[in-house]
Amino acid sequence: EPEVTQTPSHQVTQMGQEVILRCVPISNHLYFYWYRQILGQKVEFLVSFYNNEISEKSEIFDDQFSVERPDGSNFTLKIRSTKLEDSAMYFCASRNREGNQPQHFGDGTRLSIL
Amino acid sequence: QKEVEQDPGPLSVPEGAIVSLNCTYSNSAFQYFMWYRQYSRKGPELLMYTYSSGNKEDGRFTAQVDKSSKYISLFIRDSQPSDSATYLCAIDAGGTSYGKLTFGQGTILTVHP
Image (cartoon, rainbow over all chains, first blue to last red; front, side, top):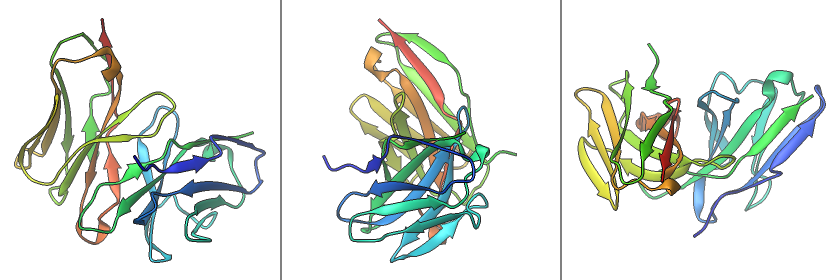
C-alpha cells in the first residue's frame, strides 16, 4: 500500500540553525500538509499546500517557517532559525484530489533542538 | 471551550472486551470526522472516516457520529492486544478550510491478554 515517507526520522540541531524536514507524499496526491506534535500535547495543524502555494496556515506557522515542493515528488518544511520550543514530532500528510478524501500521514520526524 | 475534547485515559481492558472511545466538539460547522490510531513512534494511521450522522462499520470497528449532540464515538469489538495504541479523533470543518484537521488529545488504550 502506498505511504507517505519522511526523512530523517530524527534530527538534532543547535538552536538558531536552519533545518529542513523532507516528505515524499503518496504519488497521486495533490494536497499536502504539515502538522506538529509537542511531547504530551495534541497534534496541531501547521500548513496546507496545493497547486504550489499555501492554502491555509496556522498561527504557529510564522515567518520562520516555509514550505516548498521543489520537484514532482518532495515536499519540504524549513525552519529558518530554530528555537528550543520547536522541538516536536513533525508529521507530513497528503490526500487525493478526488472529492473530500481523508489525509494519510507519514511516521514523522522527531526534531530535537539543543 | 476547547474545539475538540477527548478523554486521554489511559484505558485498560481485557482481551475480547468492547471498547468505547469518545470525543466531543464545539463547532457545529465541523463536517468530517476521522479516527486515527497511533502506535508508539509512528504516525497517525487512518481507521475510519465519515461525514454524516449515524454509524459506519468496518470489521471490528464502528464509528458513530451524532451531530446534534456534537459527539463522536469509536467502538472496537473483540479487542486484541494489537489494538493497544493511542486513538485520535480528528475533525475537519470542510469548505474552504477542508483538510485543516483539529485533533483531540488522544486516548491511550491497553488491551491485556
